Structures are given as C-alpha cells and as structure tokens.
Amino acid sequence: MAVDRVPRRVGVVGYGRLGQSLVSHLLTQGPELGLELAFVWNRDPGRMAGNVPLPLQLQDLNALGERRPDLVVEVAHPQIIHDSGAHILRHASLLVGSPSALADPATEHQLREASHRWGHAVFVARGALWGSEDITRLDAAGGLQSLRVTMATHPDGFRLEGPLAAASRTGPRTVLYEGPVRGLCPWAPRNSNTMAAAALAAPSLGFDHVVGVLVADDSLPDMHVVEVELSGPLGPSGRSFAVRTRRENPAERGAVTGSATVTAFWRSVLGCCQLPSKPGIHLC
View 1 (cartoon, rainbow, N blue to C red):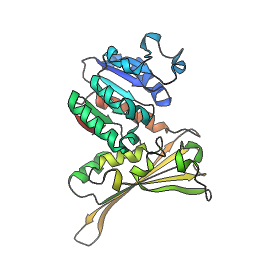
View 2 (cartoon, rainbow, N blue to C red):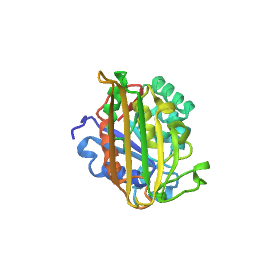
View 3 (cartoon, rainbow, N blue to C red):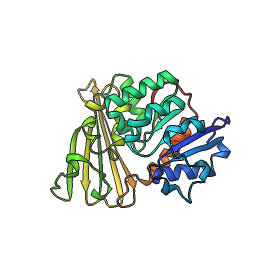
View 4 (cartoon, rainbow, N blue to C red):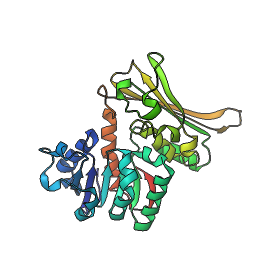
C-alpha cells in the first residue's frame, strides 16, 4: 500500500496486544513505507523491557512533544483519551483506538475544540465495524432510520465495570445490555468500541439513538460475533430498506480483540497516513 513518502513519525500509546502488533509493523515495515516509530508509552513501563528499544520508550506521556510525532495512536484504554487526548492533539493528530471514550460529551467536546485549535485531526479506528462507509453515506443522505449493533462472545472475553460486572447470567446465552450506546460505554469501555464507532459513523443518530446489545454466549469460546442491523425509509411498496451483516471474528479465549481486528487496525494506521490532517473527527 503506497503512502506519502514524506517521513511520518508515529507514536504508540499502549503496549497490549494491539500495541505490540503496531510496534512490530512500524519497526519492520514502517521504513519502506516512509513511517518511523517515534515512541512507545505504556502505563507499566516494565512490559516494554526487552521488547522495545530503550531510546524508543517514553516514560512520561506529558513529554511526548519532545519526540515530534506526526500521529499518535492510542491503543490503551478510554481513560487515556479522557485524560490526555486534548494534550496529544496539541502536538500531533490522534488515532483513537478506544472510541467508547467519546460517549462522554465533555471528552468529545474537548477533542473537537483541541483539534480545531491546533489544526490536528482526530481519527477513529473503525475496528470491527463492517460497512462503516455505507452507514455514513446513508446517514448523510438522510436515509438512515435506525441502527443496531450486537456484539456476542464468551463471558471470558468481557472486561465489564459497575453494574454490568455484577449482572447475573440467566443461561448459556444472556443479553447483558440492550439500549443506547452512550449508556453502555462507561460500563463496557473495552467491549463497546465497535458500537461507539457505529455511533460516530451515523451522527444523525449518535450515541443516544444507536442501539447497542452486549451478549454473553457460552457457545462462542473462540469467536467475536458482531451483527449490524439498519433500516431506511419506506419505499414505494410500503417496505423499508434494510441491511443486516454478521461478522465472525476468530479470537483467543478471553481476548478482548479478535484476530481480524488487529489486521484492520494496521490498515487504519496506514489510512491515517494518507489523509490530510483536517480538524474534526473522522473514521479511518
């Protein structure tokens, strides 16, 4: 995939499964694509020891400006976006890997304001959301009436908080949540990112009107299943336009991120490096 040959310095925030994959790609494939790894930051620096060259390890996230990044990729936790998103945008464009953070209106406002103030873009990784461009086109044309995203996996694949962490299961398949995506994101910050991306892809509905459904399913020990259902206006025959997709993403048991999502995220990074740094929030 061809990218601008002007060197682009990319910083990575987070060194879990996604972060490790991105760092590996940037070190091995980055130079031939005109990309350079500027730094890697992780909440636990010890995790980088022996894996990330010491000169590339960033100990203080507040000092990221010293590394002169063009793009900072967050693959850590929504809290990083809450706490440091606006600061990052002062120095570079930002690729948000935890879009559930934008369910908080104050955080979304801060990012938009910082983006326009400093002239840097906020990119949002589409992750496991299939058909995001089609959703956006339909929404822009005024033809999107409803959007529902269901994510089902084995209970071991969830990282839940608050009331959802204590929710009782009623059988081998239990609906843990069904309602507005905005209400789900605070309690399932790592398991609602696909739904958050859908809310951003359909601004006419947004976080308050895109429906998110989270399902614990014992029959899915090695897979994440994402179903997207949308409807449009009534046609001449009195029937509504409708689309339903089902994405089956292989995953290790207990993994929050599926295998195909790791690959998709690298493509998002490359996509960001092809796009102009226009202020605002953009799916990538």
